[in-house]
Image (cartoon, rainbow, N blue to C red):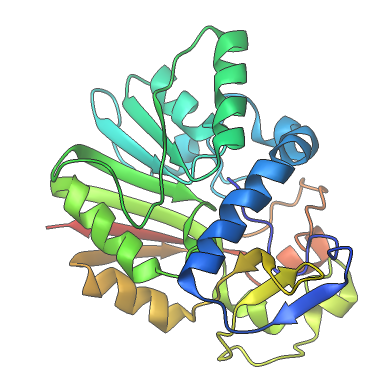
Length: 276
């Protein structure tokens, strides 16, 4: 699980933070370099919550072992898209699955290897762009992404098509990301984060840039309807849309996620899609 939401991260040294158009190549380059540079801090800050072999769908802590959104995983070949340190894949490995963890960031995959060595596990990893998956058609039974890849890619529709291609008929694709409604609100864990300040329909990317005007971090917003059309356009059938409620016993603040906001507006959207 990687995403933390627009405005969560500190400004670049130049203070270049805002919304602007970004080319595809610039966006992909920024995503790779940002996660390579920040993977250590990310894993140090969130590693305890994520665990070494835990599968949570978002900051609300919804666990796949409880939710069962992927269905039966034992004996299944599973692709994790935007895996980070492959915590989710490692959880599925312990349940008898055959996972492959894919990420754009080499440094994140080094953390996956670090945890494997400590745990005595071995999750196969691949460094690649999720919009150009390096696998043959019909390779996997299941695919999933827990806050990975989609928000950072300029080509969400392309990712959907690629996942559809590498899944076998009857396969399932489940992905979680920031609930699209959150983009209308400031990424503030307090009361200010409950006041809508910008248009939900504005899909201009959130960008942090350096003094030269080059993007160093990019997130792409799509409305709920746009995501549904990406799913349907790729040939999937949307069978469920899960909006986890904030648990009463969870006090953790993670960027803009907090009990204050999470008990009033949705923070995560999980799309459950089947390939016919």
